[in-house]
Image (cartoon, rainbow over the protein chains, first blue to last red):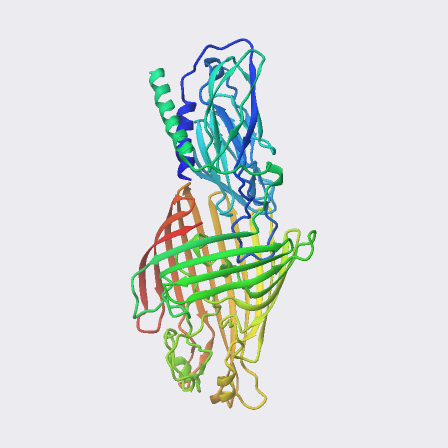
Length: 221
Length: 407
């Protein structure tokens, strides 16, 4: 957790960076794969006193977020905050890792069969949505960049991360660990990876007009 | 300024990355979709509750011989799932650095993937009420234990009064009642429902829509759950519950078991009289909405015992207990809570011809506040006040602070 916090500080600092390079009319893409340590998917904390135990989804901590350390000025000007969603299903937050731009409103609908709560004690955005029933929804607006760990007060095994960026150049890895960041203006950037499981070495990359830049990472514990 | 900020962030990022580079290398795993699933999960919980010592009033004394407001408790629990329908669940509990207690150890079997039917066998969770299944740690909105589950009455499972007067003499002395029949040793009485030990036996649970139902067949009785039978009987217990979308959860539960030891029952009972059962019925309600969480519980218990004064025939002693509690989350880190309680007893008539309750009724008010340091760490404080019209002390308040940590 300590390193997650440290990386978070670096990430926030990176996200608050001033722009580098000038905006370009055309853009390229960055794509690649993030390999993660072979960590087993874990079951949640056992409910020793639970009657009629419900099947819980397992905790998959292998999703990563790949992002640019800094972004062109135009990226900030064109930032269009929208709406995102983090479900509560099978006593888990789905997705477990959500990456958004600052100003985005995140819905936390309860699509489970039991009551849930969503709260965070993060300095950048502290909130508590209280208890709410299946079928109900709670929303939070995230205005400041940073890493916001999210929990459920009723089910202590539930946790998730919301990563808030001040530019749109980031991507969450898919089931195969692949990512793609599109519409990146040409230029030279530092590409970083955030992961719960460890750290990956940053890479300097160059993006060209309409070109695809490949960058693979390996997360180490 | 921009350049400075850029340099600062770059240095910070470089430090992070340098640490990453220095970390030991590890092989990367298989593709995400073929991940291994760990068959074992575990948890740990520590509760340090620091109330003042109390060697005169004993309002928080338990059948386990400890003060519920002055305890350091460690819980270690885990689950092993060797195959999909089967898991082994266990909990080890250590209180005040005394002997290690195997609080729970049972096998959980869910034979049908599509049907929510579950069987448990071993030392299983109690079905009565709602508090026993959330008795420890952060689920308790204040720091004390409700009277029905903690307050020791003047009844003992290993000793019996010979007369009503013997019983009345022990009013308000549940921490160490003594009687002429049975064990001559001083020992605490029994609460209405003991949570010091879980039941041993088998249980089945079923869920259908908003409803759930459970049935148990275990050793002992609600007041005296045991691992090895020392009475003639087993205990039947059951629970029906419903959880609605509105935030309301209601449950009703009941149990019937033998609470009195064979040895002592035989000393007092007339031939053909079998007066050693405890019958318990309860109702529990929970409503949570937004920052509010409210709960209420009511329990009725009836103890049967043979009385020499009545020629060894059955004496029935009733007890009611109820509480209402509420917690309000003021801010994400701060909450306040309150519990109001009452424990009362049925009347008996002594040799003086005056009807009086067989135990002294108790009223309790507890308030508290909590501060969430982080996800795994709570600091709490509060005040509990008790009133009882018998015993050495009739009224006493206790300040209490606590540290709760879990992972």
